[in-house]
Image (cartoon, rainbow, N blue to C red; front, side, top):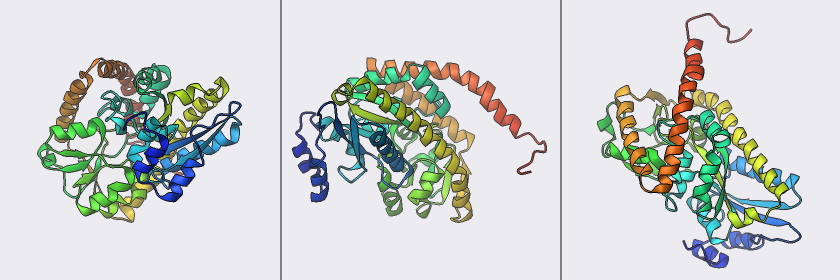
Length: 370
C-alpha cells in the first residue's frame, strides 16, 4: 500500500462497513489545535483477549491523564483486518498500530528480529536489551526508516510450541505439515519441510478446525484457552523454542510522534513501559490455572518435544538467523546487536535463574501451604 494513499481512499479500499467508516471519519487524523491531538490506534488483536484489553486500557489511561492527547482504539476487524493495522498508519488513516514486529515483514527484512528469535532471549533478557542494552535505539533505526517511532508494549513471555493432531517424535514429522507460525520460527520449520502460514489471532481456530492448517501455535495457555484451540487439536507441545519471548510493538507515525510536546511524549513512553510489564506479568499469573483447565476440563495432552527434534530445530534456527541476518546492512546490524547481548546475558541467566530453577526442584520438603 502506498504511503501517500489518501485516508478516504484507504477506508474505501479496505471495504469497511458504513458504521466503521463513519466512526473513523468523525475521529480525524490527527486533529491538532492548541497542541491537542486525537489519534486512532489500529490493533492487530481482537477486543476480547488479553492484548485487546491491554491496548484499550492503555488508551483509557492516556485519555485520563492527558489533556493534550486523546486516543480511540479500533481492534482487529473493526476498521481494518488485524494484519493491515500498520498499513493504516502508513496510509494516514491512523496514527499508531499495536501488533508484533514479525507481522510487518512485508515492509522490512530486519523488523522480525525485534519481535523474537528462535532459541533467543527470554522476556527478562529481552526487556533488559530494550531498556538498558540499547535495544529501543537499535530497533528505532528500522522503524524510523519506515516513518515510524517504535515503543515496546507488552511481552508474552515464553510461548508453547503449538497444537498438533499428530505426535512429533522425529524431525521428519514436520515434513509436509502446514502450520500457523510467523516470523523466524516459521522460517525454521520450513527448513524441516513444513509450510509456515501467517494468520491473525481470530483466524487461527477456524483454520485449524477446517484443516486449512494441520497445526498451529498462538501464544500461551491463557491465550490459547481463550481462543478455544483445544477444540481443534489435543496434543499441546512445549516448550516454545520458536518464541522464548515475544515483544509487542506500538508503532507510531513519526510525524505524529514528533508533533507531541515533550511532556506528552514522556507520558506515552512511561505508559508503554508500564503496560509492557503489565502484559508480561498478567500472562504469567494466568497461565498456570489455564494450563490446569486445558488438561483437567478439556482433556488436552501435554507433550514435550524430544531432544532430537529440538536439536534439529536449533540447527535449522541457526541457519535461519545467519541467512536472514546477512540480507543487508540493516539486518546485519540488528542481528549482531541481539546476538552480542544474548551471548553475555545468557551466561548470567544460566548461572542465576536456571541454576536456581534446578535447585528449587531438588527433593527436599517444602510446604505448598501453611
